[in-house]
Length: 600
Image 1: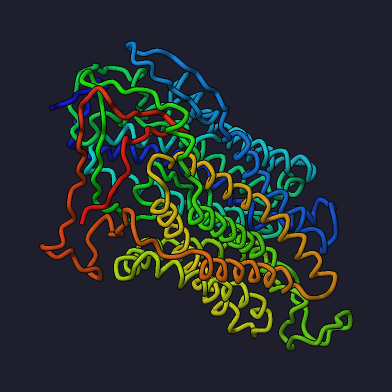
Image 2 (image 1 turned 90 degrees about the vertical axis):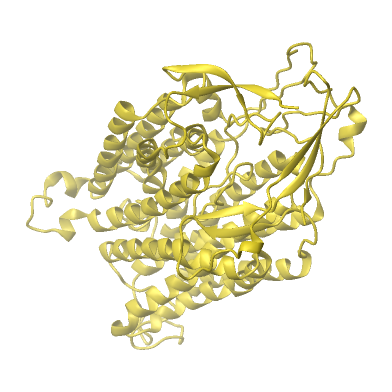
């Protein structure tokens, strides 16, 4: 029996990869990481310049400045809890619409206008921060940027609507994580190199009254200019992808053997936010789990029950009340995700502060601690300039790109997902324990030590994030993935928002007691808790669909699959009868009619 469904098809050839449209979308996508990270190199110095506090509490206010963007973005990205019921073709189906504010707006106005509005919001945020006469105005600017930037979820939807050919999905969904990494590299480099131009470029046209009055205007103007270019390109060339608002489209019945009942029309949903170096991910449509690689799920067998007319019945209360979605394994993985997101975000916040904090050698008149050398001590930082810090953060982004593009697919293809998770979680505290000792290195070894520490941190962090998401997906009941995706999103957003202020507060305490390693080793302690929790409370899954990681393109270091190991295709068996199963839209996701069973 062949079931058909109405589907909107565009005149564009679906067999061709949509390179131009994805490139334009990438220009818009780069907005968030640039806006989020351009302030990282100079946030601490900005607080000091505005005389909000002294060296001891400046790190706390810098944490507020950084977390304001993520906080506002999370608040505007929460579900609207709108529930509507309607009868469709007398099938008595209950349709529950739970979508994000910006996703709902894009459903009403179209994807393109919302993307343009989000980009304008980023521009407004950058200019407010640049022209800010006080810390509180700058804080408002950061909050404004997060509140007006709803592009993250809408772009996920646009990609799904542009890419109509399943063969193109792995490559298409690997583009956006790559764009995120580019933004993470560009943002700090611009923010650090061009901040305080009157000091960094004396005697040049940049040494003028405007930039002396607003020392952090230039990097924000440059980032805003890049955003204006992306706005113009998107407005002129980006196509509207909303199925009902797309010009020159026709509606036809298209057979889709892969999803006979479930429509492939994408819906915006909550995305899991992780560390700065990794983009947000939607577990209901993961494809690459925030990496540049292809992550495929093990083939499964499903059985769907439908009536002869293709309709389904509503589930009764007794059928749904016993469905347990928050299993012990899922709950423990959520704890692991929260701990990882927290300590990883503290690293992103503390790094530029520690790099710029004054270097205090052992034996200094004002120092009471004896832990140090003639080059530095654990009472201070590394004494670098904002410009030097920006360059280091740019190279840090390049390191992250190399690890995501080369190291992760190589390691993940050779080792099991579970083994990688345990190893990187157990080793994670090392990344935080090492950093304070950089202050003791002599000048000629300082940069070597810095980049070695950054490599260790990126290696452990970038391997851990997608692996955690894969494990959560494997542990999740297929008919409750929407709920779990929302819970993971809330967990990540909350920990990401709290991490910077708490780490800044601890760094300030460390300054007062002349022991700046306190904040770093507090994060190391959280990582230790995460390691103990992972080893003692989370056990390897023995059943359920497993995942395999392969690079999007060919790699000489990764062997191709043997001919006998070609992965089987998933099978869906449709049983037609009066005593049918049911399908509901639950938390932004269509529910399969049977438990998924991995094929042997």
